[in-house]
Length: 256
Ligand SMILES: [Zn+2]
Image (cartoon, rainbow, N blue to C red; front, side, top):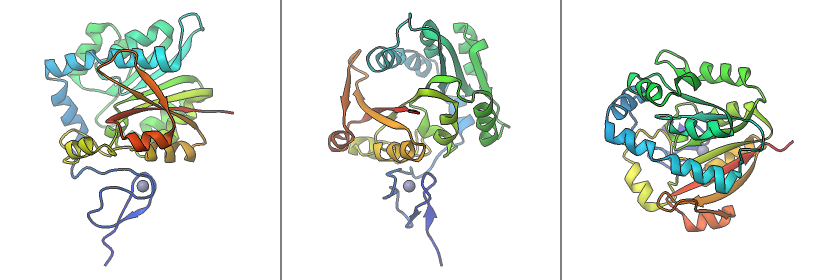
């Protein structure tokens, strides 16, 4: 009898009840909810949406302190995967052409209309096959994008080859920006392992490093703080693994 399950990121065989993959460091919450229903309910709640609007400060820190994008650098092409209510699009539009990807949820569409960014949005319908959706996108945007943002999004997307697929959209020196919660942090692990937060898989720095190597992308690591504006500390992976902060930012660059 074989009661082993496969790690969905790296294919390593996990023993029954094992939640953390020893090979790539991915952590699997005990359960997860249907994404459309879960986010439909989430974006129906006004206070939650307002807290998402406040996340602009995190994007600003990443743009100003980590990416050093300036308005006179020339038009950059940017893609925000999981753009949420869409406040990031308003910020990113100042630096070039910005588009966002989100689930086609009526409450979200209302926010996008309200913020005047609905024409910049690409919607994924409930009936779309997520693999086909991103394969089409990668074909359309092949080597056309400077910056792909995955801010607190990766853990919710039920497509385990997402990084492999969207890295094809990057221009030379193009960058994927990942901000994620860190399951190596004990409090985060204990808080999120129940699966009540819509997480499908939690990406540790080791997991992101594994995916970067698989796609021949260079990685830089940063610690940022949602409580302190414009705080971004560049750290080596070894220090990040030692410090185990509750969240981290990874900058994956396609060097040709
Ligand atoms: Zn794994």
